[in-house]
Image 1 (cartoon, rainbow, N blue to C red):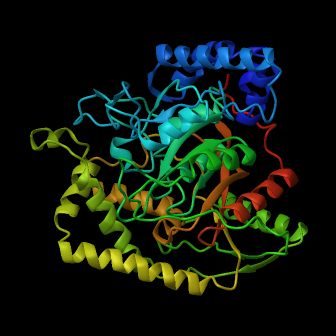
Image 2: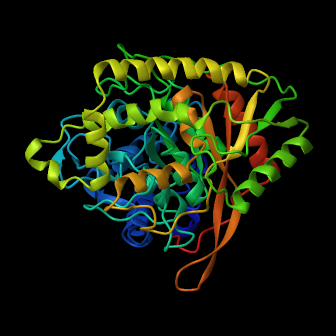
Length: 484
């Protein structure tokens, strides 16, 4: 199997090829590292590669697979980890023992992490090979990945345009066929935004389903870990890997019952929620409408629905986001090294009193209940993932006016943070595309995501519906111009 052929496999197919002995973990690693140094660098995917750690893991995986085949154990029930030998990098907001972490910030000295974060422990147990850390913006705060101390993440479909954020490096690596899957996280859309920009599947699981433990704490319940993939089946399989509780979790959840195949009632939401009046590109709205028509052909009912709350109610999210920015442990003497947006958010966080923070938390709880009531008549909500196609690199970062920067991000993502506020699961699927013109006059076709969301705990229903859409309108044949 050639390097381009094996790197084009999704994680499930690659795991199967490794088990069958069609390719070895070391061969996969060598191809991955070559791709990371080539197209991975072109799309700004990685902050650091970890070839020594990865080779140690790949050799151990190879020994385990050889022993299983020798003993006649190789197969679906061989007792081996499900993704043994499959490369999976980790976002540089998450600790991997011994690997430097900088969180995209010049204010944070890179330090070797003292331990693995919980999700990294789970990824290790699943057999994945940790090939590096992926690029993220400072502290994961904006929806673009343009850090001062790392590479700018670009969509492989058009290198003039952003891969989104904050899991931009992860998305760029998966879309460019460097790796089949990459860890990411999502506090306001940070898995779904880059999934849309890069033509991938990005699921934000239900609040409490994937724990931040044992070291992370998310008292507001906005953020969660997840992965970026090229197939729904990979997303579902890695949710099985990551959906584990830790003692002390503020929020816990379990996967709901498997879907029963019934006709679903789908609410089509085309009006921006958190940025009232934000312009919506025709290609983004058309992609959602086309998905609605496809769902009707698949036997479901679709009705148009209005926003579940007014844009002013989003102030609770903004308050919690600002306090979250302030919680990052930045020494006072290094505060000046933060980018203007981060400093602005931290100043806003300092202005939030204890009472105001408690009020914001209560407001989020109340909003969650109101949304549940407003959407009680539908099983699934369908919308564009973003209001625009992938943004030009540098077009959203406004260092001399952080408020304008934040407003531009809000207008770009007027649906994504609704799902973080309410804790409901949501997934972006690469069902649309747009024709865009770059400043140099060149034209490109770029992906446009469609987002589906469901009730809290209905992740299985959501993924089953996503799989049906993938089957009806497959995207695996589409490849970006910059790929291995």
